[in-house]
Image (spheres, rainbow, N blue to C red):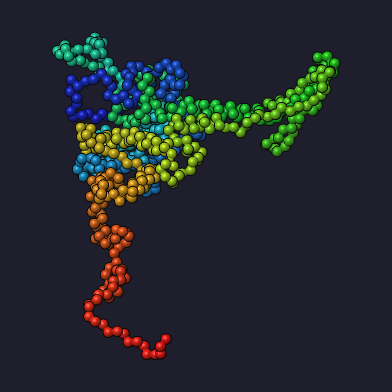
Length: 555
């Protein structure tokens, strides 16, 4: 069963025959080499990490079940995908797209249709988690071949273990076999390169293979056209082996080391924690056989094998069972110190888990997650930016890169939908795709704290430079260099300030006393102006009569 199932989107103006290259069209998908046989390519793995992509994906999924790894993955997914009861986790941004409003509205409507097909509002977390763990994700774009202009009918998720992206060289006529790269006879400077056939191979039976992949023939599976599949990778590629890697790949060694350390710690504590006794039994001058028999009798007589049954709650004596941690019984000849019982101390430093903490931090760092998030350490700090760990800022940038890479999935689906519904042409998409952005819902308080701290620092610098405004600095310089305002922000703020002064929301700066910062007091109509200092009355120069003295006796 081998047939091409799906559809292809052809450009109206394909590249000229002279515009050829021996390089594969895309080397970021892990198919930078040409495959000639076998369903999944194989190679000799000297290090023993993985042999096929299927083994690699199985290892990633097993790693994701480890508690520490799962906690780190959840931190990453929760930062990247923010689910809100009211807002969608992702929205399309067409502000930079140079197109008519009608086309923008159509693009927004089709993008909403794609989100509905994916049920992204409800399944965003699982979709993103699957993509992050596997390092790749496949979707089959199902359309009605009789009515392709209706667009995508369904988006079906495909297990990454059942799908493979293949790029092979088209077969030539054996009678006219020529070298891979050869000169054209009519033009000595022109070269001809092999034609590359690119498709996907789907094998529903290859979920958890037990046999070697190389033993399977190339006809195993169903060929699906390239344009019928949405294929989004993590962007990490092992260039030596041509394999797409997950972001969990760096943590393979760290997680194995942590597991071994934890297991060895448990074994050590179980075997060394209890105290054991040494019984020195005096056997006198008994022969060897008699001495061994006497020692065995004493041991069985004084041996304590009380066992607690958790099922019944009883305590019983089980002397017939050998325990993992037995006491030591040693014979001692005549002339020694006689019968003696001594105690061996239990293991020391059983509470030391420094090595466990070290490998935990190493695991988190290998996954690009700040170690401060481990086990709830380092609570959320609402302080200055200097108190915010640099690891958190690096983590925010890492999540941003993951979002951009994950957006390629929406790009491919949107391209197919717009072209099938004749909204745009393939040529238009090449020029428009660069200006289509995707807005993820943010819930990172650290970025808000960073912006707030930057604003506080700028306002502090502005306050320090205020006495020198008009002397050494102009207002325009201060607004551009200290406050970092753009031309648009300056014009917008000036307009809003004038509007608020006119509305009376803020006072007019002309009415503010610069020395006190308080508004000037209005002049009083009654002449009883308490805002002005009291002046001496004017003297008109005319003689004035002396005031009458009060009548009375002399003092």
